[in-house]
Amino acid sequence: MIVLFALKYYDKGSATQWYTSIGMPIIPFFDIHLSYRSITAKNITFKSDGVKDDNSGSVTGLGLAFNF
Image (spheres, one colour):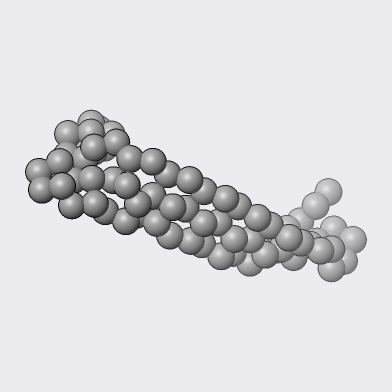
């Protein structure tokens, strides 16, 4: 449903992303990690008026993992 809405009002664009994560063990069954994801999506054009949307963004995460 959302995809059909998007195709009706927006031209196709392009998107790229990259992700990295680094972690280290803190005790035998646990590790702590830091991650970063960046998404670039700048060429999405609104059909009615030709305005380009910039839907780019990034996320940073900090986590604790239980490993067994």
